[in-house]
Image 1 (cartoon, rainbow, N blue to C red):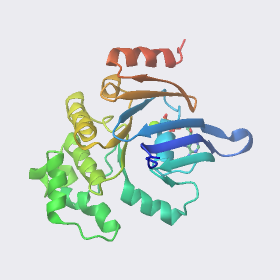
Image 2: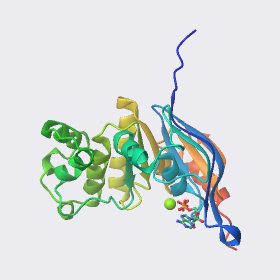
Image 3: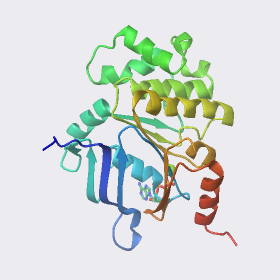
Image 4: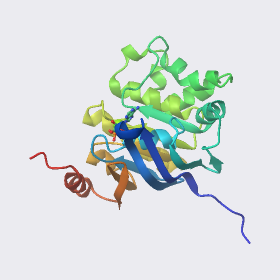
Amino acid sequence: MGEHVNNDAVRLRSVTRRHGSGGASVTALDQVSLTFPRGTFTAVMGPSGSGKSTLLQCAAGLDRPTSGSVTLGDTELTGLSETELTLLRRARVGFVFQAFNLLPALTAEQNVALPLRLAGRRPKKARVRAVLEEVGLADRARHRPTELSGGQQQRVALARALITRPEVLFGDEPTGALDSRTGRAVLALLRGMVDRDGRTVVMVTHDPVAASCADRVVFLVDGRVSGELIGASAGDIAARMTDLEAAPC
Ligand code: ADP
Ligand code: MG
Protein backbone atom coordinates (compact mmCIF):
# COMPACT_ATOMS: atom_id res chain seq x y z
CA MET A 1 0.00 0.00 0.00
CA GLY A 2 1.12 3.61 -0.54
CA GLU A 3 2.85 5.57 2.15
CA HIS A 4 0.76 7.83 4.33
CA VAL A 5 1.02 11.34 2.94
CA ASN A 6 -0.38 14.16 5.03
CA ASN A 7 -1.46 16.85 2.61
CA ASP A 8 -2.75 19.19 5.33
CA ALA A 9 -0.45 21.99 6.39
CA VAL A 10 -2.67 22.65 9.42
CA ARG A 11 -5.62 20.78 10.88
CA LEU A 12 -7.91 22.00 13.65
CA ARG A 13 -10.17 19.43 15.28
CA SER A 14 -13.06 20.71 17.35
CA VAL A 15 -11.05 23.66 18.67
CA THR A 16 -12.71 25.62 21.47
CA ARG A 17 -11.05 28.69 23.03
CA ARG A 18 -12.71 30.19 26.07
CA HIS A 19 -11.53 33.28 27.93
CA GLY A 20 -12.30 33.66 31.64
CA SER A 21 -14.58 31.33 33.54
CA GLY A 22 -18.11 31.07 34.89
CA GLY A 23 -20.70 33.65 33.93
CA ALA A 24 -18.09 36.11 32.66
CA SER A 25 -16.53 33.65 30.23
CA VAL A 26 -16.35 34.40 26.51
CA THR A 27 -16.22 31.61 23.93
CA ALA A 28 -13.98 33.02 21.19
CA LEU A 29 -13.95 29.74 19.23
CA ASP A 30 -16.64 27.09 19.53
CA GLN A 31 -15.68 23.60 18.27
CA VAL A 32 -14.07 24.76 15.06
CA SER A 33 -12.86 22.01 12.70
CA LEU A 34 -10.93 23.12 9.62
CA THR A 35 -8.06 22.01 7.44
CA PHE A 36 -5.69 24.16 5.44
CA PRO A 37 -4.29 21.98 2.63
CA ARG A 38 -0.70 22.50 1.52
CA GLY A 39 -0.22 24.87 -1.38
CA THR A 40 -3.53 26.69 -0.89
CA PHE A 41 -4.51 30.26 -0.01
CA THR A 42 -7.39 30.60 2.48
CA ALA A 43 -9.04 33.84 3.59
CA VAL A 44 -10.87 34.03 6.92
CA MET A 45 -13.70 36.54 7.22
CA GLY A 46 -16.41 37.36 9.71
CA PRO A 47 -17.84 40.20 11.79
CA SER A 48 -15.67 41.91 14.41
CA GLY A 49 -15.34 39.65 17.47
CA SER A 50 -16.25 36.48 15.54
CA GLY A 51 -12.97 34.77 16.52
CA LYS A 52 -10.79 35.33 13.43
CA SER A 53 -7.65 36.41 15.30
CA THR A 54 -8.13 33.68 17.90
CA LEU A 55 -8.43 31.10 15.11
CA LEU A 56 -5.18 32.26 13.52
CA GLN A 57 -3.35 32.36 16.85
CA CYS A 58 -4.48 28.86 17.81
CA ALA A 59 -3.56 27.54 14.35
CA ALA A 60 -0.11 29.17 14.57
CA GLY A 61 0.67 27.95 18.08
CA LEU A 62 0.56 31.51 19.49
CA ASP A 63 -2.44 30.64 21.66
CA ARG A 64 -3.64 27.36 23.14
CA PRO A 65 -7.14 25.95 22.67
CA THR A 66 -9.20 25.25 25.80
CA SER A 67 -10.11 21.95 24.15
CA GLY A 68 -9.65 20.25 20.80
CA SER A 69 -6.43 19.79 18.89
CA VAL A 70 -4.24 21.56 16.35
CA THR A 71 -1.83 19.68 14.09
CA LEU A 72 0.91 21.37 12.07
CA GLY A 73 2.00 18.90 9.41
CA ASP A 74 2.36 15.75 11.48
CA THR A 75 3.05 17.55 14.75
CA GLU A 76 0.29 17.68 17.33
CA LEU A 77 0.66 21.03 19.17
CA THR A 78 -1.54 20.22 22.14
CA GLY A 79 1.05 18.30 24.12
CA LEU A 80 4.00 20.63 23.50
CA SER A 81 5.66 22.61 26.28
CA GLU A 82 6.00 26.40 25.96
CA THR A 83 9.63 25.99 24.90
CA GLU A 84 8.81 23.37 22.30
CA LEU A 85 6.00 25.56 20.96
CA THR A 86 8.31 28.58 20.73
CA LEU A 87 10.92 26.56 18.83
CA LEU A 88 8.27 25.14 16.51
CA ARG A 89 6.86 28.61 15.77
CA ARG A 90 10.30 30.00 15.00
CA ALA A 91 11.19 27.17 12.64
CA ARG A 92 7.92 26.30 10.93
CA VAL A 93 5.42 29.17 11.05
CA GLY A 94 5.44 32.70 9.64
CA PHE A 95 3.14 35.44 10.94
CA VAL A 96 2.45 38.96 9.67
CA PHE A 97 0.27 41.50 11.46
CA GLN A 98 -1.72 44.55 10.47
CA ALA A 99 0.73 46.79 12.37
CA PHE A 100 3.89 45.26 10.72
CA ASN A 101 5.64 44.96 14.15
CA LEU A 102 9.12 45.72 12.84
CA LEU A 103 11.86 46.75 15.28
CA PRO A 104 12.41 50.49 14.63
CA ALA A 105 16.11 50.50 15.58
CA LEU A 106 16.99 47.78 13.05
CA THR A 107 17.45 48.12 9.29
CA ALA A 108 15.29 46.12 6.89
CA GLU A 109 17.95 43.43 6.50
CA GLN A 110 18.49 43.25 10.28
CA ASN A 111 14.74 42.87 10.82
CA VAL A 112 14.63 40.12 8.21
CA ALA A 113 17.61 38.29 9.75
CA LEU A 114 16.15 38.46 13.27
CA PRO A 115 14.24 35.13 13.29
CA LEU A 116 17.46 33.31 12.36
CA ARG A 117 19.43 35.13 15.07
CA LEU A 118 16.73 34.28 17.64
CA ALA A 119 17.08 30.65 16.57
CA GLY A 120 20.83 30.87 17.21
CA ARG A 121 21.66 30.63 13.54
CA ARG A 122 24.06 32.88 11.68
CA PRO A 123 22.09 34.58 8.88
CA LYS A 124 23.77 34.31 5.47
CA LYS A 125 23.88 37.70 3.76
CA ALA A 126 22.95 36.16 0.42
CA ARG A 127 19.87 34.49 1.92
CA VAL A 128 18.69 37.76 3.54
CA ARG A 129 19.22 39.61 0.24
CA ALA A 130 17.38 36.90 -1.70
CA VAL A 131 14.29 37.16 0.52
CA LEU A 132 14.33 40.96 0.30
CA GLU A 133 14.57 40.58 -3.45
CA GLU A 134 11.60 38.22 -3.41
CA VAL A 135 9.45 41.00 -1.93
CA GLY A 136 10.94 43.62 -4.26
CA LEU A 137 13.00 45.47 -1.65
CA ALA A 138 16.61 44.56 -2.47
CA ASP A 139 17.39 48.29 -2.79
CA ARG A 140 16.03 49.13 0.70
CA ALA A 141 18.11 46.69 2.76
CA ARG A 142 19.87 49.42 4.77
CA HIS A 143 16.74 51.49 5.46
CA ARG A 144 15.04 51.63 8.84
CA PRO A 145 11.26 51.21 9.15
CA THR A 146 10.64 55.00 9.54
CA GLU A 147 12.38 55.50 6.18
CA LEU A 148 9.97 53.11 4.46
CA SER A 149 6.34 53.44 3.33
CA GLY A 150 3.62 51.29 4.91
CA GLY A 151 3.60 48.93 1.95
CA GLN A 152 7.38 48.60 2.08
CA GLN A 153 7.29 47.95 5.83
CA GLN A 154 4.74 45.17 5.32
CA ARG A 155 6.94 43.66 2.62
CA VAL A 156 9.88 43.69 5.06
CA ALA A 157 7.61 41.95 7.58
CA LEU A 158 6.75 39.37 4.90
CA ALA A 159 10.43 38.81 4.14
CA ARG A 160 11.06 38.37 7.87
CA ALA A 161 8.26 35.80 8.03
CA LEU A 162 9.68 33.94 5.02
CA ILE A 163 13.36 33.81 6.01
CA THR A 164 12.95 30.50 7.84
CA ARG A 165 11.00 28.95 4.90
CA PRO A 166 7.90 28.34 7.06
CA GLU A 167 5.38 25.64 6.24
CA VAL A 168 2.51 28.08 6.68
CA LEU A 169 2.29 31.85 6.48
CA PHE A 170 -0.44 33.44 8.59
CA GLY A 171 -1.55 37.05 8.12
CA ASP A 172 -3.93 38.85 10.49
CA GLU A 173 -5.33 41.66 8.30
CA PRO A 174 -1.94 42.13 6.60
CA THR A 175 -3.39 44.71 4.20
CA GLY A 176 -5.63 46.38 6.80
CA ALA A 177 -3.31 49.36 7.29
CA LEU A 178 -2.44 49.82 3.61
CA ASP A 179 -4.09 51.84 0.89
CA SER A 180 -5.71 49.71 -1.79
CA ARG A 181 -2.85 49.99 -4.29
CA THR A 182 -0.09 48.95 -1.88
CA GLY A 183 -2.44 46.37 -0.41
CA ARG A 184 -2.83 44.84 -3.85
CA ALA A 185 0.95 44.58 -4.23
CA VAL A 186 1.15 42.63 -0.96
CA LEU A 187 -1.74 40.37 -2.06
CA ALA A 188 -0.02 39.69 -5.38
CA LEU A 189 3.08 38.61 -3.41
CA LEU A 190 1.01 36.25 -1.25
CA ARG A 191 -0.73 34.79 -4.31
CA GLY A 192 2.64 34.30 -6.01
CA MET A 193 4.03 32.47 -2.96
CA VAL A 194 1.22 29.95 -3.27
CA ASP A 195 1.25 29.62 -7.08
CA ARG A 196 5.00 29.68 -7.71
CA ASP A 197 6.43 28.26 -4.49
CA GLY A 198 3.60 26.02 -3.30
CA ARG A 199 3.42 27.77 0.06
CA THR A 200 0.35 27.67 2.30
CA VAL A 201 -1.19 31.02 3.23
CA VAL A 202 -4.00 31.74 5.71
CA MET A 203 -5.12 35.38 5.90
CA VAL A 204 -7.75 37.21 7.93
CA THR A 205 -9.26 40.14 6.05
CA HIS A 206 -12.26 42.46 6.08
CA ASP A 207 -11.86 43.28 2.42
CA PRO A 208 -13.83 41.19 -0.12
CA VAL A 209 -11.39 42.19 -2.87
CA ALA A 210 -8.46 40.88 -0.79
CA ALA A 211 -10.40 37.72 0.03
CA SER A 212 -11.11 37.12 -3.67
CA CYS A 213 -7.35 36.55 -4.15
CA ALA A 214 -7.68 33.41 -2.02
CA ASP A 215 -8.72 29.96 -3.27
CA ARG A 216 -11.24 29.62 -0.48
CA VAL A 217 -12.98 31.95 1.98
CA VAL A 218 -14.01 30.61 5.40
CA PHE A 219 -16.67 32.62 7.24
CA LEU A 220 -16.83 32.77 11.04
CA VAL A 221 -19.80 33.91 13.09
CA ASP A 222 -19.81 33.85 16.91
CA GLY A 223 -16.77 31.58 17.01
CA ARG A 224 -18.19 29.01 14.61
CA VAL A 225 -17.61 28.27 10.94
CA SER A 226 -20.77 29.43 9.21
CA GLY A 227 -19.78 28.42 5.69
CA GLU A 228 -17.24 28.81 2.94
CA LEU A 229 -16.92 29.93 -0.67
CA ILE A 230 -14.48 28.50 -3.20
CA GLY A 231 -13.15 30.52 -6.11
CA ALA A 232 -15.61 33.32 -5.38
CA SER A 233 -15.63 36.83 -6.82
CA ALA A 234 -15.33 39.92 -4.62
CA GLY A 235 -19.02 40.60 -5.33
CA ASP A 236 -20.09 37.15 -4.10
CA ILE A 237 -17.94 37.52 -0.99
CA ALA A 238 -19.29 41.00 -0.23
CA ALA A 239 -22.85 39.71 -0.57
CA ARG A 240 -22.14 36.88 1.89
CA MET A 241 -20.56 39.32 4.37
CA THR A 242 -23.61 41.58 4.15
CA ASP A 243 -25.78 38.58 5.04
CA LEU A 244 -23.58 37.75 8.03
CA GLU A 245 -23.35 41.21 9.54
CA ALA A 246 -26.29 41.74 11.86
CA ALA A 247 -28.52 44.63 10.78
CA PRO A 248 -27.91 47.62 13.10
CA CYS A 249 -31.57 48.69 13.06
P1 ADP B 1 -11.91 38.96 15.66
O1 ADP B 1 -10.47 38.84 15.32
O2 ADP B 1 -12.82 38.21 14.74
O3 ADP B 1 -12.36 40.39 15.79
P2 ADP B 1 -11.11 37.84 18.23
O4 ADP B 1 -10.58 36.49 17.92
O5 ADP B 1 -10.11 38.91 18.49
O6 ADP B 1 -12.15 38.29 17.11
O7 ADP B 1 -12.04 37.73 19.51
C1 ADP B 1 -13.12 36.81 19.62
C2 ADP B 1 -13.86 37.01 20.94
O8 ADP B 1 -12.99 36.67 22.02
C3 ADP B 1 -14.28 38.45 21.18
O9 ADP B 1 -15.52 38.44 21.84
C4 ADP B 1 -13.19 38.99 22.07
O10 ADP B 1 -13.67 40.03 22.85
C5 ADP B 1 -12.83 37.77 22.88
N1 ADP B 1 -11.42 37.79 23.34
C6 ADP B 1 -10.33 37.71 22.53
N2 ADP B 1 -9.21 37.73 23.28
C7 ADP B 1 -9.60 37.83 24.57
C8 ADP B 1 -8.91 37.88 25.83
N3 ADP B 1 -7.58 37.83 25.90
N4 ADP B 1 -9.67 37.97 26.97
C9 ADP B 1 -11.01 37.99 26.90
N5 ADP B 1 -11.72 37.94 25.76
C10 ADP B 1 -11.03 37.86 24.61
MG1 MG C 1 -9.00 40.29 14.86
